[in-house]
Image 1: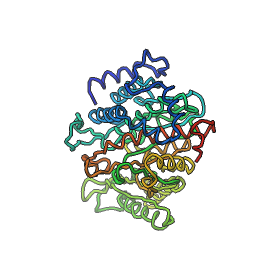
Image 2: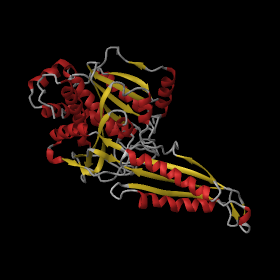
Image 3: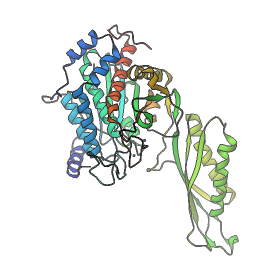
Image 4: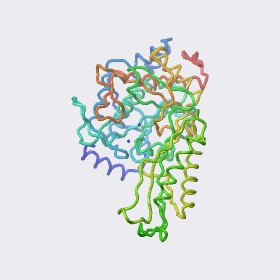
Length: 458
């Protein structure tokens, strides 16, 4: 849920040379053909009593639909890996400038943060991730990836397109916004690091709530799914080097055998879930790698194990990590060995559980039901997948949503991270509408400002 060579080189050089700056004064910004001036959009909002119909009308305008699909296809053809999203970032900035939307860049190397509205409190954030995966695309279509070994196989191209679609809608309604919407275009979700870096650079300053979504093939196109509370599991990895003293296998008494210590540690780790945790509190500990020794008759100096752990509650997740460390160190000590344990590997960093704030979840559920219809807004099960959106939720209240893209007709039947992954592009306006409707109505409810939509207090 982790490339235009000349453009990349030029953009990278520009990013390195230019300090972060807020583009407050855009020289004669160009507006997209269907980008009405904000006062016209505001008047339409005041005159139309149907909130979802108005938002959907803006999202489904033929010019907007065509524009959002074009953006998604351009990004899909030019996939970029984590922290290499220079061309993607340039595309986002280009479209924001055409819409007349202010932004800050670079943030966390390639990220973009835009704002729409009053510029003052309250602030609500919407987030989309930008990075692609190191996968060879096997889908043969007109907009296939132009770069071998790189593909948008997790739908981040669609996420960016939908958030830009929301930006266009919100820009049309900006005079009616009762606060400020922060649009976060984030790098490096696949590496599990991008959200942390964006937070470190202050993207959540003054933000009171945040919303994000992810496309999934398991639900029919246009269906939305989420749940309050614990939604996606936290994901952690560990790597432990257990050191002893090598020697000849024929005289083991002259050695300190790390193979024996590793074996005991692997067995003992299995008892954490089976004997120490509540069966109703789903947790996983898996040792998936063992490296040790180079010959059948030589006891090595050291051996290494590595694995993963997952849990749904933050309390259980961090307790599980602590217990893994205790067990490995204890088993190493029993066998007279020393150990070094790493939980912070660069390739597989720790990601906390995704826990939806109940109040924000209820608001998202109500809004998304208005957009897609109540029968198409379903309660999702807790899932063992992980999302670095969870880092934002550790700082502010937030909710994460799944948007179905499943459609046999379009070939959207493969899971994320598959080389055959395809989306039904007809969901793009739906995603844009949900983003925009959530932000607009959340600010309105928070300020309790009496406008035409003042009844939206869920």
